[in-house]
Length: 341
Image (cartoon, rainbow, N blue to C red; front, side, top):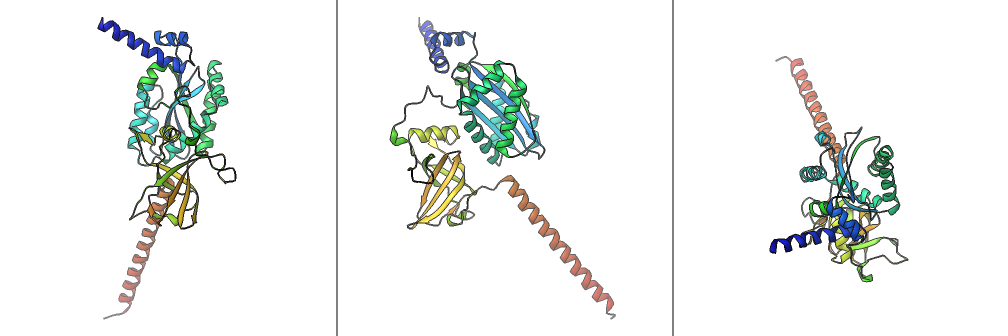
């Protein structure tokens, strides 16, 4: 009897999960649980460009909801990344991306790629276009769609994008994916005060403004008053509203009930009434407002390109110094040899 009850509860749980992704259609949800219908589209891909940028990503789409259900992405300068092929089952491929992400020292490109994909695919029309490509077996247009999206988001071209389609059930996805995003049917209606929109006369009108703070770096950091637009810094979202938690979760900035630091791009800085005021972008139309009383040093992030340029500059200085030293030694030897004892 106990075993029967356990089995009954398990089936009920599976149907409840599937119903979320089947837009409330219980009969269709039952078909999902029986294995007769796959309601989550899984797009697995790898890409590269002529500048030695390599990447992997998976996009999960709830077919019946026509909604982005999950995403994981990686961008790297390591050629070994491209050895991973998207023909593996989605769970294996997702584990691979997560493992490589944890090993990647500079995740700036990965964050940029993920934010761009989330922003683009949060549009219902874009999701509908993707589903129409799939339903029409138009995989050329599907691959071209994502290739153009990658080129536009990363500002590099041309990009070679290799994509593989796999269908799965919402139950398997819900229970096993580490990249799952909240779907609309899961979200609780937000209280008006939870949405921190700027005032109509504010330059940030139409953007979502969250509260946050900078991550300090007392010895090696950049003084806050030296910040300029485009600088990348580490910040922490301090706001604990449902909206903030939802956004942070989508940006991998909320885990185990706690906010964690993420990279943000400086949009503006000014000194007002004795306070340093910073607006930093964490995703399109989403900013974090930071107020600091003191001119603190904060943790900044240097891009892989800037790091390479700095290394080349240092190497050039070393070579130039070596040439000068050798030249001085030669001159001294010539002078010594020209003066007989």
